[in-house]
Image 1 (cartoon, rainbow, N blue to C red):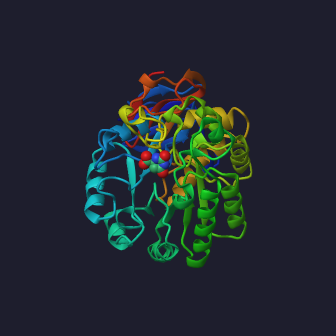
Image 2: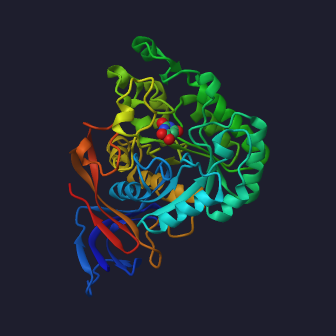
Length: 426
Ligand code: DOR
């Protein structure tokens, strides 16, 4: 459908656009971008007092298909993404069967073509994510992957990871590391510290992550591979990434909305919606992440959208699966915690949720920007709309959000992805 968004404040950090304009969308592409445009038959949306952002790009989601369709499917995940203003995602490979074979990727790509979202699958680093034998990375790349990761698992064998990075560098694939030393994590189910002692739960120390990030950064140095640290959560790991960047290494990182806004203090009620890997850390870590946003060490905001059923999450804390959903709240949490609290500017925030992820993934031009002639992926946002997150409000198949009951400021009102428009109820 053709569309004219009138008098909307366009924010496109890539093209340095920060002004009130009319935006004309024809045949799924941005046709014109200037003041005083005529509708000429297009449907009109009044954008006064609203902001128009490039469709958000989430580098880290679990759509659970194939294998765990009771938690999420490509279709349900796509709609949750669109509701959050997200128009492109990287799906993680811990499906069943895992994305370690061309046929699994073929299947995902076939299904992804039927949904109105841009889906960029990742493939596994090792067969079955078991850390023993490398996946056929070249075949997976031919099938259409954009990155490799054993997400959920760290590749413990340093030689295997070195070989993986050698191949990834050769194939120009992004290596996404789930940096967590499992031996050191042992039976830990939450952050190790005062809170784990108080609650009588086994903890996992920050060192689990710091050690893993340090090793992977050194392997990036050795191999020249592009390394992306997923869901970074500790002060130490952030410092390692900061140093690596100063040294000019191709190392980037993402931080989730839950890690930059919440701490392990919230586990007092043993609510499994606060259980995830890596775990919520201390205020000292959270403050360090905020500083990482300020000084630019944090490249991207990604959700690690990890749906699990209510039955699974109802188990005892130590038995419940780790993970929380995030697609429908990521922009609102980021606006509330980073923009409204003046940690970073709106332009910087939008960059970390669109243009920078596009750069990290080496997506074609048009992703992460609002440009005449390029396809229209857009999020129409009311920056000041206040709302309380309700369990019933989620359209994801799973409801395991750690933000239920939280008051947020900022809401996606409509999403455009190519030639389709969704209007969301407040
Ligand atoms: O909490 C998590 N859940 N962290 C991960 O890395 C994996 C994810 C999942 O797949 O549920």
